[in-house]
Amino acid sequence: MTIVENTSEIEGYLLIDHYVPLQGYRVCVAVSYLFFNVIGFIVNLWVLYVVVPLLFANNVRVPKSILLYIMILCISDLFTMTGMTFLVTEVILGTWKFSATACTVYLVFDSLNKFMAPIIALLISRTCYATVCLNKKYQERAANLKFALFQVTIAIILVMIVLWPVFAYSGVYDIYLNANKTEKSVFVMRKCNFAPPPSVELGFSIAAAIANYAIPLGGILYWYMSVPLFLRRRAETTLVGKTGISETAIRKVITTALMLTLVYVLCWSPYWVVLFAHNLLLSDSMSHRSMVIIGYYIHMLPYISCAVYPLIFTFMNKTIKDAHVQLIMQQRRRLRSLTGDAARHVRQSVVALQEMNVPVFFRRLSVQNQMQEELPSTSTTKYEKVSPSPSTHLTTEGNSSHQEVQSSLETTTEETVECMDSDHDAEVIEVLL
Image 1 (spheres, helix red, strand yellow):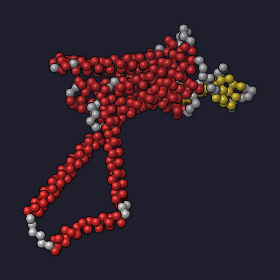
Image 2 (image 1 turned 90 degrees about the horizontal axis):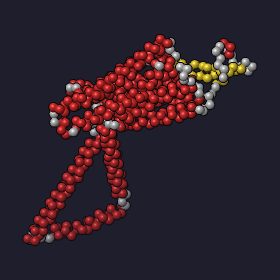
Image 3 (image 1 turned 120 degrees about the horizontal axis):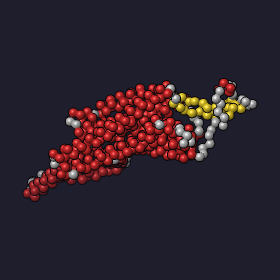
Image 4 (image 1 turned 90 degrees about the vertical axis):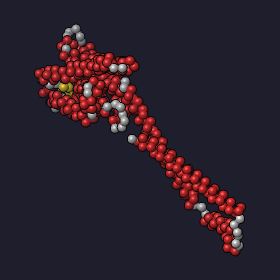
């Protein structure tokens, strides 16, 4: 293919979109990117499903600030995964098929992955350190939801300020190929690119590497490793160490810190090394094709971290998983309670309707039968003077005693039903609250 260098020669030419066939190494790159894109969406949506209800639930042992940080991390990762779909489309088609605004959005979403994920990991490590190692005042502030939201807001504002070169120097660039002077047509291939001046690019890269690689890595190592040291010192002066609780907590913190550091180093170190050592990759010992393949896979590593970080903070946290399971069980009990109440009201309504639909004839017949049963006793009291006998007195006393016992049983039954209803209401209130 012949690249047209002088665009003035093709003024007025018919522009024909050029698509590169999906073949060779681009098939492997496209499949790899598409796979991790889908995995990233699934993982982050699942973590949001677990974390967001806990953020608005009561009696959750996990600090609300930690839950907020994980939620912000997942939202940022979803933005990154959305931007990744633009990149996958470009890899498959071989050209950029979207607008210049979409190009800027893609580059901003891609940069959020480089900035927000390390910052959130740093804030979580700081919160864990403050909750365990500092006094009550700092513990309450670290767990405070408003303070966490304030920190996230400040971080987002600073990130947007640092990203100003992305807004200023991103755009879609046209590459013209195979100009046909006879037919006055030329093929055009478009690429979304970030092309600032060399000085701006160097300053932006240095600032990003310091703020989003060196500082977060140092902070994560310092704060996470300070926790087991603090627990070990406290165990030497208390009885906690004899029960094994301190050793279990130390092992858990060390495991989390090692996994975070391992993922951080593996996913981000190659990216920043290649960014500053691109002259080495452009040497004569490496072909352009090999450089492009390596660049694609190195650029994919930060996307992999988008799926790994939420799993580390959520799947390895037993308290979050137990709280989620408890919340699901409460919702199921609430649903069963509401269903039972609805069924009881339906049954009562059906019985009431059935009683209202009894024929008038049968109701009159039952009234006449009651009147006939009462006639003999009425005539006796009217025309005969019956002297009370001992047997009659005993019968009357027996009837009154029977009525008192029956009244007492009815009162006890009503009190039992009311007690059961109050227990049921307490259970429902406990589920709801």
